[in-house]
Length: 157
Image (cartoon, rainbow, N blue to C red):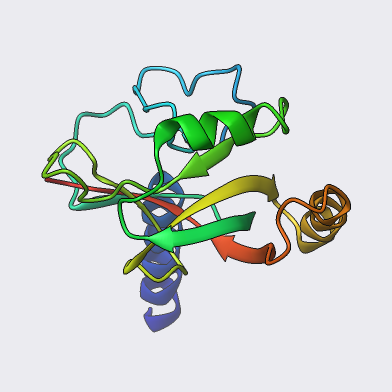
């Protein structure tokens, strides 16, 4: 009986975890369905069940941090200019809790929230990310570029 309870608990945990981790849409020309994301945000699929949650997480992915700066200091025009260099991969930046805008509720895991950044989606695997980093370094525009394993986080306001 104890084995059954443990198996049931693990099964439920798996469902709960899978529901909370949506698939990333790395192509900037495509949307993530019913949820609206801003141009500077990396979008992902979110549940369609209208259940209130404290936060939602995307699947894990690799990003390449191209630039860091003071928190809330990176303008959208700069991110958009970088996006032109990577037309098939989403370039994203953080504006979490900037400008007293309660709708800026997207943050990213495994980053220092005291700083802002511009990053480009690098893939689901470390192998993909390493290949993408070589491409980024070949441009010589982002000398401090580095790989980061991340998730997108939507925080309820």
